[in-house]
Amino acid sequence: MERDLGLNADQARVRLASDLKSADLAEQAKTSLGDAFGGAWIDQASGKLTVAVTRPGLSVTGADVQVVKNSLTQLNGTKSVLDLMAAPTSITGWRVDEKSNTVVVEVNRNTRDATADQWIAVAKSIGAVEVAEVTESPTPLYDLRGGDAIYMGGGRCSLGFSVSGGFVTAGHCGRTGTAVQGFNRVAAGSFAGSVFPGNDYAWVRTNANWTPRPLVNRYNGGTVTVSGSTEVGVGAGICRSGSTTGWRCGTVQAKNQTVNYPQGQVRGLTRTNACAEPGDSGGSWLSGSQAQGVTSGGSGNCSSGGTTFFQPVNPILSRYGLTLTRG
Image 1 (cartoon, helix red, strand yellow):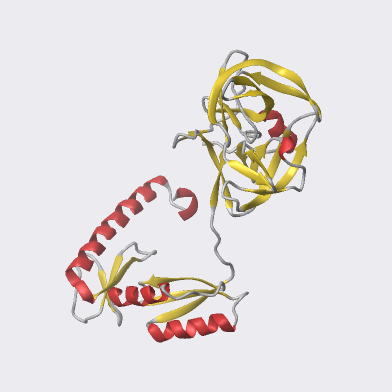
Image 2 (cartoon, rainbow, N blue to C red; image 1 turned 90 degrees about the horizontal axis):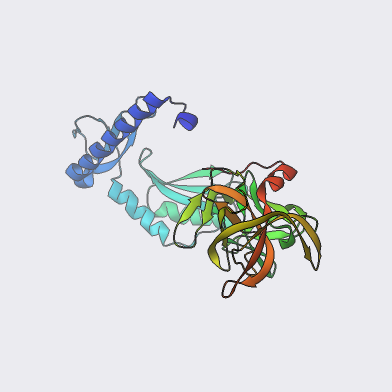
């Protein structure tokens, strides 16, 4: 509230207390007025509650009163009928607007067409409906979380860590320009940079549907909040997250290892005895809340055990000028 509403800490506390009091008062008015209740809203300038009523002469202690034509029950009824109507894509939504005492239908002015106008005409015939034009259409928003699956065509890897503008992962998961889908197979963005072999790192620039979060999936219903990227030493405990085998732990056995993959040498990797399997590539490595790296490759499996190597995360951040998303 300090950042987005321009309030200092004391003003924010006063505002929250006043808003809670108004919410209680509005609920009491709704109960006492019954079908005469037309809605309620808080004036943004004064902070005072206004209660709408459908009959003159009614009063509400502690609030201003405004006489309106439609009860909230009527407005909700109109909206319920609209909810049953299939809408064209240029109709972006509809809502009960208590302050205007109408149901407001929003339509994208850039894509508005005859089909939208026909839908609006039917909506207006049902009840008190007003139209508001908007310039954008809403889309679902998704969180970026370490260890979750990412998809590149027919291949699957795992997300490493959220960064400003996207996330980091393994370079062998995709070349620069490769399109990426998130855990839910929704388009997420594309590889903005990728190196493999030599190193094994990449970062994906995501689209506006995805929000970087400082979280890593523990695959037990919980998450770990990432607070930094301080590198731990040989012998330290370490855990990893990946979309094939979930959350696995072990110890750091060596640093600055060169691994001679069939595709070529990768240098500067960290060796561990935590297991991993195909599809875990690119996933997160953590020591406590500190980001360590992204899964590169290894041998063995999580049934019999194995050796896994990860690409340290700090060189990825440095190479691409990225900022780790922290909690």
